[in-house]
Image (tube, rainbow, N blue to C red; front, side, top):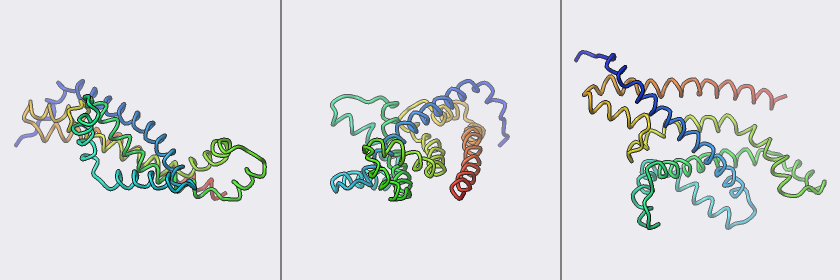
Length: 221
């Protein structure tokens, strides 16, 4: 078989549009998922048995089941329970946000526990309200410790976002599959699609390594 990558120049706009959709979806789910993950992380460290139990079930379920099954269930089954249809975009956002929330909650839980109890005791001694303790003392330190793992989770989410093509969302993978089917050139098309994912994911993984080293150095000082 003779390879011909030049045919892809005709579809560069479609591929870039699909890539932009993938990036937008990923950024949106990162923002929502990290917010959810932090709240769940707080619940996991709560003194309330009820909050710990509910959050624990949520985390273990979404970490212990394939993202594709979660996506299919939300797209095909959840509308039957709600009584109205969900778009593929809404289903993708919900599924990836819930998944991101589950994996980041463990990151936040670990970083929250790494904050020394003596600092909380100092907050109590100063009479600071609980909300101020969390936002001004615990949160900044927890986020600093969590940054490397959170960035790794973000890269993972970017790659997992390709699954939304399975419910017909026009992301990079979906566009690539359509072009592959129309041109009968799967090798060239899917190779380029893989390289586009790699071109974004690889620099981010290198950046995560550099940031982790700097943070470890800063914490060691």
